[in-house]
Amino acid sequence: MNIEIEEMQIHDLSLINLEDFDDFWNMNILKSELESPSSYYIIAKYENTIVGFAGINLILDESHIANIVVRKDFRKNHIGSKLLEALINKAKSTASSITLEVNTKNLPAINLYKKYDFEILVTRKKYYNNTYDAYIMTKYF
Image (tube, rainbow, N blue to C red; front, top):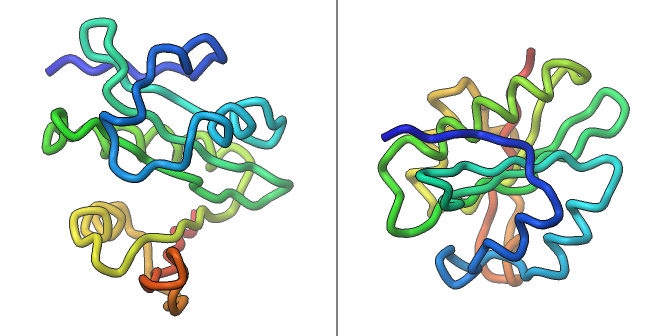
């Protein structure tokens, strides 16, 4: 599968149907993130269709992954890995580490992050919707 990774542009928002993705924020928050000078967003395209996107916040020497989202019908095609690699490469240019939160029940994502040498630092209780716990994971460069 030939996946292209590109920097997300504001016009790309009209090409994303959030119903194709699990429990992602909403379009207004995504637009706000994309307009922030400290955010960097990318898209994964397959045959000119957006099949995933990801974002990172870069502030001084810190980087934080805001999200990595892959369309439900394109999962298990290594798209998440390609998006993560692109975010790591971007973060390396300015930061000494990269951090993220992940639901402790999201084993596919946790395993992906571990594959790229992220370490679990701490658990935040009831982080998601005041119900589900999250791991704070960090990769040091």
